[in-house]
Image 1 (tube, rainbow, N blue to C red):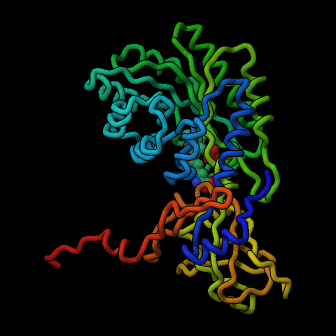
Image 2 (image 1 turned 30 degrees about the vertical axis):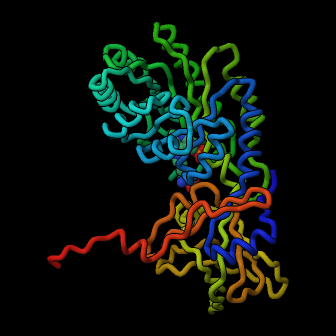
Length: 410
Ligand code: LLP
């Protein structure tokens, strides 16, 4: 679906009014990606729940909610964001290994569609919270299918040693316990084997196991209606197409052929990843004996993916200069050797003030930012055709200082 090209005039206006670093998102691209996925999944009638964790800006969630997309949330905070963005409660699924009783209560009050429960202890807690409110909580069991998603170790979730879900063979015992409890109704199974999956084979393996456990539970007499297939569909950080929704949908159709389960998916990165860039300005260029460093105003606190996952983000000068192209590390001002955005990239000579664009930063960019080194959170902008708006103003140092309290006894 190509790259997100910020129109030159818009880009100039944004950097002049909002400054850098700034995340810029494309409304058109998010809409196009949602529609492509929804069209591919339409024959399966699978519900789409956007994984809010990928990009939780209210404008982004609102945009997707207006297209009819549901939400996958993993905290009380994300639940509140989804509701505030207008996602109907009955299109919200709540996942996560550590839901607190307060978060469960808030989700029950809102009337969410389903909880994806990840342990027996959570099942007992949910039943208690629901009983205290005199309601019944719908739930699906997140199973761990012990499949290797063949992605980065820090975002692999479906191996037996990972903290997520309950081993799939324990599902019958879990359903038996759920049936014995008042306050809960177990109606589904869910699976999520990892993020940034570039191959369909691991999904197929997991879905075959999911279907067969779903059918086994039905045969045992349980009301098993829903299979939640999770998220994780990857994007090509080198600019290619990556796995296509049509191929994913065809694989699901084949695995689920003849089974009549309601289906759901939880995509995050695939919807918003390629639809965002991070704009940063060069502060200095420094040529040492062993390396050339381009020092920019964005840093690991603004985009942590390169240093945390060895993630590759394409990086391009906005005004392509031809002079003196040489490999360089693009680094931020933070006092850590791990503070890099790109390593060994061929870039032309850069002058102070030159703009660089870091691609595919729409997912797990701004949401993972911190204020390390007392660096305020950067601005976020949404572009829609020739309109644009600041959807998160840049935080100020005064905002940061005002978050703290100094006791008068110091
Ligand atoms: N559903 C569940 C239960 C999840 O844990 C996740 C992501 C998703 C759906 C959405 O996955 P997606 O479609 O976006 O791959 N910070 C990492 C990614 C962490 C993903 C965590 N879970 C990164 O920057 O690559």
